[in-house]
Image 1 (tube, rainbow, N blue to C red):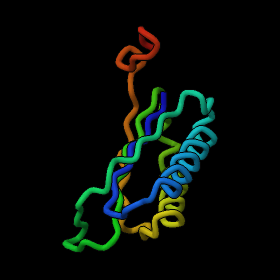
Image 2 (tube, rainbow, N blue to C red):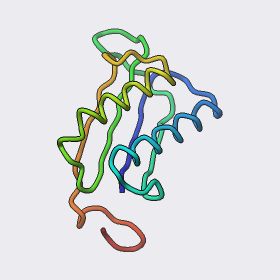
Image 3 (tube, helix red, strand yellow):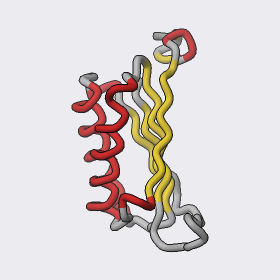
Image 4 (cartoon, rainbow, N blue to C red):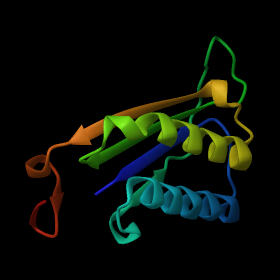
Length: 114
């Protein structure tokens, strides 16, 4: 049920992409206390982006989950930003993260909803 979508102007090769997918999946499951078997992570193809008028490395992340506790967003922001900085070389101050709590009846899975 957690979904993490990542957009960046940093190009990734297949090996690096897989490493980032696995790291974000594991960190998200651990931080939210949810089974990793329900975590989905998507990295969109390299996206032309500007932040503060600069084309320097930047990243936008969306994290949506059922029952996303507002009290966890600061920790998630820190953890995800650190991983993006480590793996993509994007400074934390050039990362935006949008958090969204999805109502169970508005999240479909396995032919139904949660």
